[in-house]
Length: 197
Image (cartoon, rainbow, N blue to C red):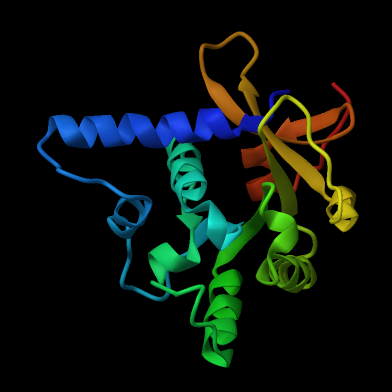
């Protein structure tokens, strides 16, 4: 299984920027990328609540694009509800709780900035209790390794990685714990747990 690397995620975002520039866009930011998909209806259901550090805007924009490329609907707070991470109120928490109820799973985007986030552990704990462990950690690594230094508690959750589907020229998300794994879609929609293949 392969980790998501910062470079892979940044490349997806840059590919979109180049495409937009070729169509005459002068500037294309992470916020603009995510705001395009904003849905006004508050009752929308999502596959993934993407918990992340607000310091990772470009990474999250690229990661959301990758997850959507794989066929998942993804909720990002500052995109879908235009929540400002610099202006947090009790109303913000109320909105996030409502959105978590509308999501099938929470993916915890564990980057180098995640350990400094005050909201990510709260989102993780709330969602874990709400949805009976439909929580997984997606390590974003600068290298081929990752460590949860300072956030060891995330080690109790499954890990999400991306890899080829055996015998096909297509990538998929996989949920795994050690050597056990299952396709993310089966974990999400059929409550299948990782198993030894």
